[in-house]
Image (cartoon, rainbow, N blue to C red; front, side, top):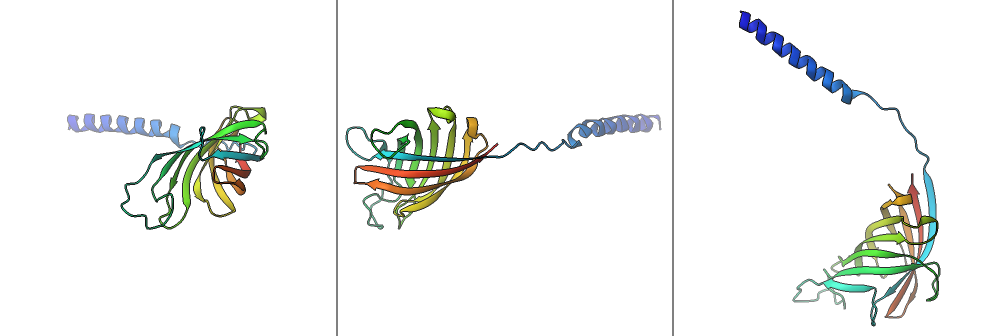
Length: 185
């Protein structure tokens, strides 16, 4: 009987400790509403496909024995990207940052690229900040929309969208106009 009482007492002490320990995690924290900021960005991405200083290079290609999509760039091709971001479409426009990332031709029967790009800003109000885009990009559409999924610096915890419009293409150079709406805290 004495052993049962001792065991019961030890069990009660242990269970009371569990209840005391769990109270710390069950308390509600007050809601901290941070003001939401909306920032609209406008810039041009300049991409060089060939020449002595390309900004996009193929890093891998699937070992396809056939090219069923009749594309010059077969399904599964992976590209590394390092494109300058400029204020305007001209070659002499001020560089405000660069887009670093990867793109993979992911549509078997289309020219759709799934891409991850980090747009890092190197000058101005957003110097040191970046926005991250991870989205499907249907290249042959003149106008399209991509998802903003994150950021750092001024754009920490960002979300939003980017509207793209093909501005110029000559087979070697591509210039794309970006209008980006970023929601951040």
